[in-house]
Image (cartoon, rainbow, N blue to C red; front, top):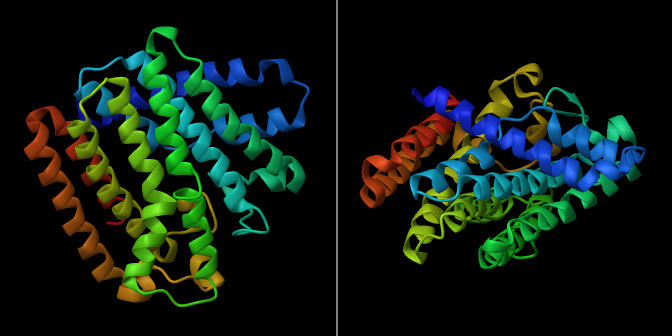
Length: 296
């Protein structure tokens, strides 16, 4: 199976799990505009990068793929909540997401806010109500995702991101923004794959480090694409960082140096995961390389 075929297989597993869990959580609320808005943003589109990472880590560690698919769905729910809130007028004020009107443009600001809230809480419902035989793993999964999403993770990253719209950031400060805003959830996705495999702490720590590295690469490439790709290619407004005055890796280093840094960090991540897991990590190595190729 080629890398592309395997990625597509994981993506389809994640999509099926999302559809199942969304039905569990929202099926009684078909007449609810909040539920409609949540499904609008959750089920249509997206590369499912975090879900694929969760599933790939679990399979590498010979874990329970059905459990991992449920965890992957929860990660995507939480990620979707963050995108809905990030697009709101009080945050980044973006009108498009994944090639269609953002949630608040399609359903109104108040409904979008509530849809994000519903997805956030649904993520933890999904994590906590899986197979009873996995109760300890489910509890650990909730803890991992809560830490990543909360005041010491994504929310702090968003706070810093808003702060540096009006203040220049150094490289160290920018890395802190994106370790929290982007890296925390990517690292959580990898850890949840390890939790689904009931992996040793050392294995969880190794995949977490790998995920933090590729999470930063993901952001570096996003910064490059913001100035080099079109709105149609991105599925969201191009040049939005520049227009909002944000400090990015491109504003600090330029496109070429940002891509050089991303290449170097990718090689570091690939080397580390290969040394730890050998050929079992071949897909994750290719996954890391695919993220940096988005900017080439």
